[in-house]
Length: 375
Image (cartoon, rainbow, N blue to C red; front, top):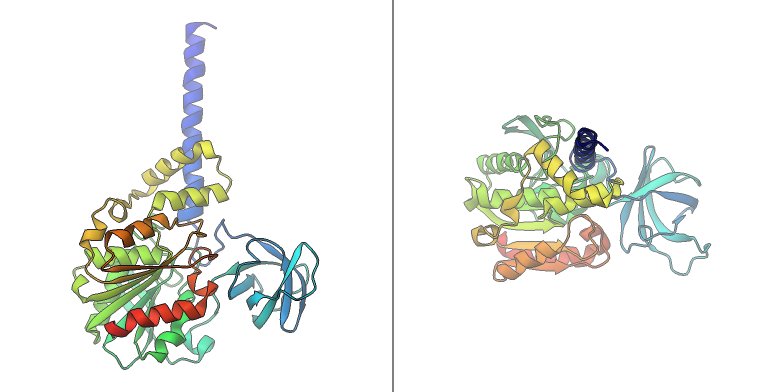
């Protein structure tokens, strides 16, 4: 080939790779950062209903359908709750039978495509749980943020923050438990959620900008009577809680953190979502850099070693080795760096943000022991 031809071919190849990197970055970024709250994550595997009778449902056999614990079972026109695997129930080799705890909407018809979610309830605290609550609006930097407020007798409030793939209905899983402790609860919807302001770039930032909405919720709680607050977050909501505990002007009011499956390594989470979307492994580094350029996302504060020394509030982390979306190694490292302040409650066989679902009784007992001295 002539030199000019070789050069042209090389330039074309480089431009092609650059375009592929940009496309991969947008693809990966869309998977992790552009999905509306409550929509299935790409890591969620669909299942088929094979049979359903009162009290039990038969599903496609998979790692997902064999998970221990209690989960929501949902499709576009159905919401139900499934309990443990029924080991003695008769089933085909490629299926599994779980207890069917309740059906809230629709019905699990044979052949229906469904997914399992950690979110057990639909509706608000009154309609889902029969708990008195108020609809409130919190002034945020982008506009009004809707929240549910559940009154309680104590002056320590709990502010709950959902994460990836769920909505503010997710914290309803533990709302009765918190209500029984007479703790006021503020359940926050933040930028990008239904009814909340849209992020300026239309993308989620895995907690790095969203934490300022949580900061606004802390200000609201203090304004209306909270002496102290406990921040309880799942997934990116846990990352928001960490940012707020370190960076908020009211961080001295934060007396405790409960972190369920915290996203401490945003690049690892982005890679996991990109892989689930089918981005080739060779393009993952380019995809992460392109997504970072799209959003300005860095997340360095959670991994650069300055977080652990900056923490002042005690923290309880629920996390485990089966979380494929947010690796638990950073959680272990955080607990190891501040053992006098940070406790790690390891939960095996639990997917991302489903540590309560895998073992509700042990989760709530650990939470009770953590919260009691803070109330």
